[in-house]
Amino acid sequence: MMISPQLEEALKSREVLRVQENGLDVRLYDTDQILVLGTVKKDGRTVREGKKRVTEELEIPAQATLDLRSREKSFYLDTRGIEYSGVIGGSIDNLPFFPEALALLEKAGVDLHKWENIQNDYRRSSPQRYPELSEFLNSLDVAFAARKWERHELAIRGFIPTLMGHGNMHPLALLHPRVMWAYVAGTVFPFERKDVFDFEKGQKSLEERSEYLAPEEVVSHGGNVVLIRPGGLASHRDERDHSYFEAHFFNPVNYQKFLDGQLTVESPLPSVRDWEFAVTYGRELGRSWLHFSADPFDGLRVRRQREGLLAQMKNDIYLTADDTLVSTLEKIAPLPL
Image 1 (tube, rainbow, N blue to C red):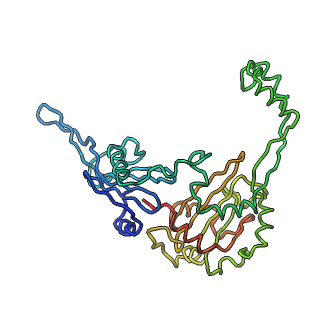
Image 2: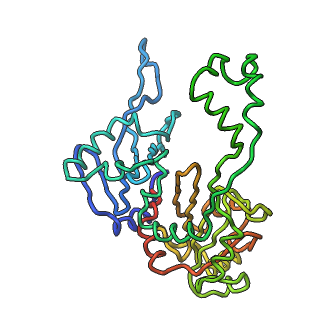
Image 3: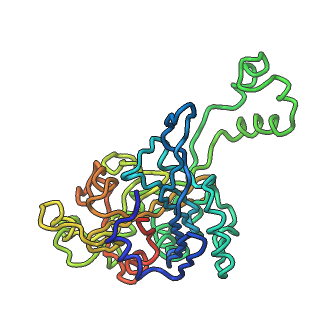
């Protein structure tokens, strides 16, 4: 939806460049996010005038956003008070004025490709997109990361079915050297490497650190904390190994007040006062990936969490959060455009 007047006023403090030209209002923020305000022409109602049918042409206010760091993009048409029944949101790829808006930024000296030259950037989720988090993630890698081997069925058992045409490939594929080697290797060494996060190992390692918080200390802790838990709402299960974890940064005292109805969300921009910052980090086949987001306590994602931030489930681990890191998170968190 379109940004509110309150949010627009707050965003002024984070604005680093504004270009207004040809009816476009293009803004760049210190998070490398772009906001473009303009209008698009759409067909409205078709009415009969005498013997002719005339289609009304509408000029609808439009908002488009692009996050240069994550490459997430969206657009929205403000149809309030306008009789328009078409699509009001979606991809900006076909939005007429957006290429012009980007060209205006490039003309002003903005590097639109600063986050594009990253190696092994599968689906634009490489941790290198957030170098500010590298030290934190490296410390958790040391505590949790483990390489294990999982036994699978002997590969040779699939040879005959494939030869008879009952496998998932054509029988002639068995003549390919790589396929032949896969059958030999999978029979001689029937194990598959897995990169996992061992929460039993991590718990023991983190308990020795000064920032570790016992469960009973969390709610009364006066500062900010980070909750480490297995990803995918799996913190209550008995599994020791997990493919990814979540790190939630928040203020436990304020969060409890919010749950008790004693605190309302007032910050329009990401703030540890009444927002939660979530880092999701995973490793598979030697490749790391990361997602970073920020949401207010009353946001849909936080409210949907079946396991609350203070639930203290089986595998939940709490640490005191470094103030410098929290300040950095507030600065780089995506703005709610």
